[in-house]
Image (cartoon, rainbow, N blue to C red; front, side, top):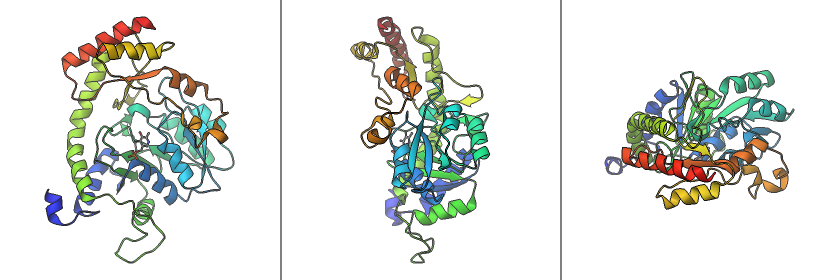
Length: 342
Ligand SMILES: *Cc1c(COP(=O)(O)O)cnc(C)c1O
């Protein structure tokens, strides 16, 4: 209401304050707010000058937005397989996917677990590639204390309502490069910084001040929510005996955007039984991106065995911060009972 009454409702003081406050989450990098996580990824590739001549290595085990951003700038996504433990890009698979046309690697910190950034950065350095982190599920995640979104040339976040924090819709790009930050600011707003002083061709991907004001309140809550997510996850880890707990790599801070187990063999029956016991569950992702319709003709033939295996086995359970202890008990008991079907 304060924002609406102020009359400054788009890319005004609330957006500037949100950018400033969010930068403390990403090692004080420059932060540029946009209207979605997809816009953050798309704009970053645009600002890096990635286009039709280029290939960008992405996982297929992710939300379609990761590869869509690559296609939107006219570049070709190259799908690489994942590490079955973390569900993030496997460095050896990325190494095998590098070609003379490769311009960038886009690791996704899937489910809130950080990708293996040290190995990926070493590869990127060796081949002169940019890294664009898809941190849309990883607000507050870290590797050896270094936050997700602060490793690559840029880190991209989403503030869609299902994420660990939201702004109705919204996105943020974090970068240590002041020139890249300025280019992003131009590109999100018709190529201008000062009004009507257009410097380059740009789009309109601005965040509203209403969204930013909501994002600022959410950002204040995020540390407490993340602690609660981690407590919930640890509680499920301790009580679920039927299936192995989600893996957490050494040095990784997992923020449990999803709490994901593997239910090999009889996942459908497992989920049906959970549902009968009053426990919701979901599969992220039922179809790997390379087999979604826009990618199928060109990429459908690819062999990505760990991706296919994950697609067939994963199941995500409730872990959100508003679960009560009684609900957590019920989730664990239901999983232990339904697990006997596997
Ligand atoms: C949500 C999400 C996006 C896109 O974010 P939007 O704000 O919905 O555009 C991109 N990548 C991943 C991995 C996501 O989970």
